[in-house]
Image 1 (cartoon, one colour):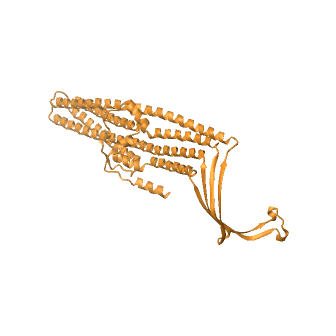
Image 2 (spheres, helix red, strand yellow):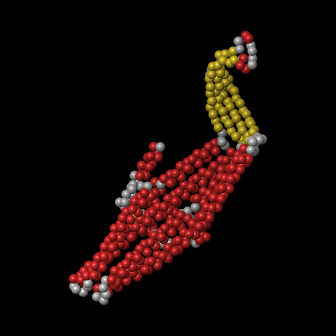
Image 3 (cartoon, helix red, strand yellow):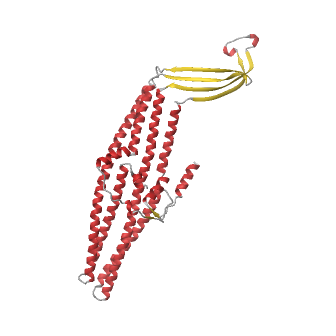
Length: 429
C-alpha cells in the first residue's frame, strides 16, 4: 500500500521541461503510466502462478520435530489388561527428522507448468502492448497540442498582417485616396483575427493540460511543445511488408499466440492426469522418548497412483480446457483480422495525408501570392481593400487546411507505427 502511494506521489511530482519534445513526453509517460503498472501487476500475478506450478516438479524438503509426554488408554483401543488398569504412561515420545519428497513421473504437472510458462510469456507481451498503447496515446495528444500551437501562431501572424493592412488603409484615408469604409473593413478583419487568436491560445492551453494529464506528471500549462518533426513526412511502406512486420512484432498478437499455446498445453495436462504418477519419499532422523534417548531411523517409500474412476471429473476438466482453447483460437483469429485492418487503414491514411499535405502546401503558397498581389493593387489605388481582405480570408482557410493535413499525417504515421508494433521504437529516442 505504501509502495503504491509512493509511486503515485513520485509520478504526480514529475516536472515537464519548458521545451517539451515528443521523445521527452514519451519517456515521462512510459515512466508514469498507470496502464503499464496495471499490466506489470498482472504479470506479477501470472509469474507467481508460474512459480507455484514449477514447484510441483522440484524436490520438497521439510524438517519436522516433536517432543510429547502422553498416556494411552488400552481400553480405548480394545485391550483389557486388569493389572494395568487400562492405562499406560505417562511416557515420552520424541521424533526429529528430515523429509524429502519428489514426484518421479507426473506428466500432468509437467504440462501444467509448461502452460503457465506460456501464460507468463503472454502477460509479459501484454506489458509491451500496454507500452505501445501509451505511446500511441501520447503521440496523438502531443500532436493535438502541436496543432493548437501552430494554429495560434499562424493566427497571430495573420493578425499582424491584417493590422498592417489597416495601418496602410488608415494612411490612405488620411490622404483622401481611400474611403472610411475601407478602414472599417480592415479593422473588422483585425478584430476577427484577434478573437480567433485568443480562442486558439485558450485551446492551446487546454491541449497542454490534457497532455500533462496524459503524461501523469505535474498538471501545468507552463511549457511549450517544440517538435515539428512529430508530424513526419515519410512515405508509407509496402503493404505486404508492413503486414508481415505487424504479425511478427505486435505484442498483442504474440500474446494471443502464447495464450493459445497455454490453452493447448492445459488440455494436454488434463488428459495426462489419467496416467499413473510415481512419487518417492525419504525420511531420516532420530526417534526415542527424549532428545538424549533416541536411535536413528529412516524410511524410503515409493508410490504409484493410478486414477481408475473419478466420477467424470477428468472428462469435465477436459471439456472445460478444450472450451478455453477454442476461445483462445477464436480470439487469435479475430486479432489477426483486426491487425490486417489496422495496417491497411493506417497505410491508406498515410497515403491520403501525404497528398493532403502536398496539395494544401501549394494552396498556401498561392494564397500568399494572392495576398501580395491584392496589397500591391490596393497600394497603387487600382482597387479598394476588399480584394485584400478576401484574399486574407482565403489565406486563413489555406493555412488551416495545411495545419489540419499535417496533423492528420502525424496521426496516420502514429497509427501505422502502432499497427506494426513499433510505436515506442519509432518515437522514443
